[in-house]
Length: 113
Length: 116
Image 1 (tube, rainbow over the protein chains, first blue to last red):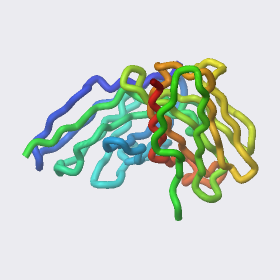
Image 2: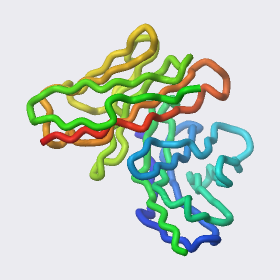
Image 3: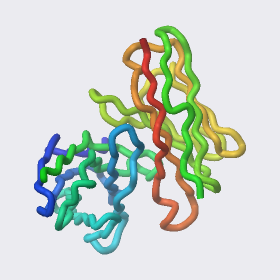
Image 4: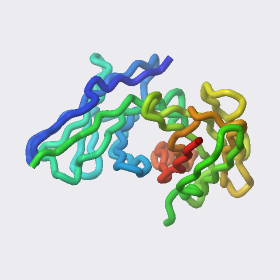
């Protein structure tokens, strides 16, 4: 069965510092991989997605992620965090199709001044 | 272009009652998926509809059901509500069959259901 692991429940980063959120997936075939962000009381917004091709994908708001098949990882990065990036981040894998997503448990990002 | 619209935004129901939630997808999107989000279980897939047919179903009891209309709008229904059904219910729509842009799920803001 497909699964996604986000090992960090909370991460605190100073404003202006770099960020890396970890994501490991388990899926037998070539995965569809996604990163979503959720602000309190809101829905999910897609940051970026990977299907095939270049393993480094660029997303919105200055985020990028790198797909590493050998490590079954899809870590999210941002070179300089802004206070408005404070939110919860979810990694997801398309379980056979992208309409059925399996999500990780999320990582809550706190940004300190 | 309007996004995914879910109504109502908030609901309070009593145990044993039933509830219907509505989702209007982005214009032209034919796939609608539903997810339940709780602090304990996280985001879990409920079901997906495409062209009025349920194509995928998650591991939820039969009290959870849904349907999709010819205009792609979808409803989900929960009967005999339990306290544990309190959650944020999220709807997502996808284009499907439209090239790479079809491979993205757009989420609504959700319906917050509280069962008392």
